[in-house]
Length: 109
Length: 113
Image (tube, rainbow over all chains, first blue to last red; front, side):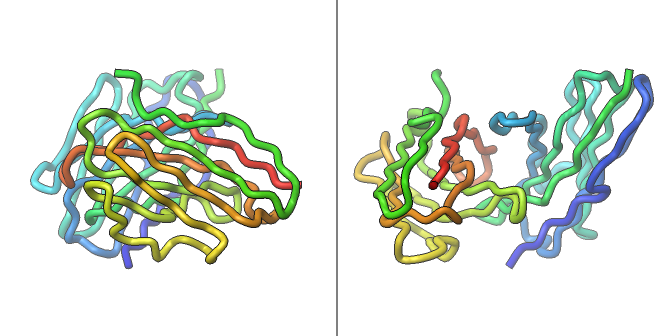
């Protein structure tokens, strides 16, 4: 069964800092990996989808990388802003999608 | 597109009552997933359907839980009888094909008292 781990569980940074969130998974036979954002009491918003054949995807200040062979993905956030404060979830798709526990990010003004 | 639509948004019910959660996937999406989110256990996959057929229900916690997808545009998750430990946020998600991303609904916050 696929297991997904996210490190760190929580992260607090000052505004403007660049940061990296980590995700690891145990079964590398994946179709794709998806990063989501969840605000408190809200649903999940898709940020980036990386197919198994891709190495990275970019959207604005966000860049996600995938190393399928080593079972790792990172989400890089450039020039962080207080509005980036949320929980970030990594989800791995082996036909069904399994989630990590998330990283709770706080960006201080 | 209106996205994945879940109802109700909030449900408060007494222990022992039947609860029915509803989901309308995005039109054209052929896979539908039910998840449960709690602080202790995070997001757990309960069951998923491909082309209206249940594929994997190994995540359904007990026989009190059941899910149906009578057609491509509607699914229900039923809990009977409900218990306080069922209190959680229940999410529905859909996708078109195994290589595409998931779209989530806004969730149903269930409280069983």
